[in-house]
Image (cartoon, rainbow, N blue to C red):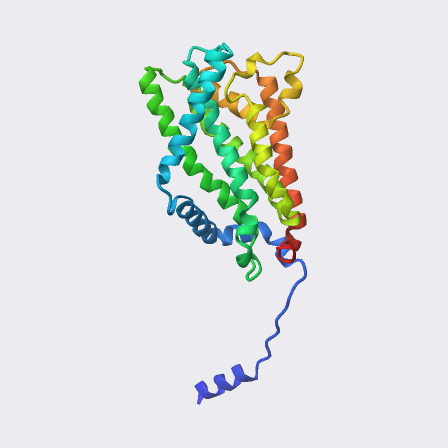
Amino acid sequence: MSNLSSHENIETQNWDLVLKPGRAEKNYWKDIWRYRELFYILSWRDIKVRYKQTVLGAAWSIIRPLLTTVIFTVVFSKIAKLNNPGNAPYALMVFAGMLPWQFFSNALSESSNSLIGNSNLITKVYFPRMIIPASSVITSLVDFAISFLILIAMMFWYHYVPSWHIVFLPIFILIAFFCAFGVGLYLTAVNVKYRDFRYIIPFIIQFGLYITPVGFSSSIISEKWKLLYSINPMVGVIDGFRWCILGDPMKFSSFLISMAITLLFLLLGIFYFRRMEKTFADNI
């Protein structure tokens, strides 16, 4: 009898569905944590897709930086006759600069096209869209890890012992991540709104390679242009990598300028991405 009455009470109850305006905005950062499993799935999927049906697979993560290092070493050291201000062999100096740049360029290229590549997912279900470009940046860390193993092998080859500053390397890896993530967020949002912008991104990456101290040391830059040159956020990151790994000299005033620009790009990228996020489904 009691079970019957409780069943009747449940049937006679009125249930109200309350939709609170701005709830998604208010809980946006909590939702990123709630959807962390999706973040993991997307990252793992991107890793598998990157090396799927490729002839050399993960070997591309080894071949590309090695070839670039050889070319830059020959051009800048043998032909241009530039010297390394530190004690490390020139090839090691180039590769130490190639590590963060390769991570940055890969992350920028992958994240800028990530939303368009996941258009079907964006138009069907809700989740914080920031997860998609973030997973692309995380995926680029796999290439970075593989390339770092090459650097260790090169150190054994040259019988070079890294500087004790290497304990600070995780800090500069984190700074490189924030730099790639901030710029990537901004370019991702722009790429959704203006589709032809995707043709400009490879040019930006290629141009950035030659104005960034990858094949040479930033110490060759004249003091007159140091301030302007440090506006490039990757200058501070690469100098930091060489300071940590090789013990090369680093001008901390230039480093602080680069870090301030990195923080500016990160805040600008988050702001612009969140501002445009409501229109992604319509534009895609």
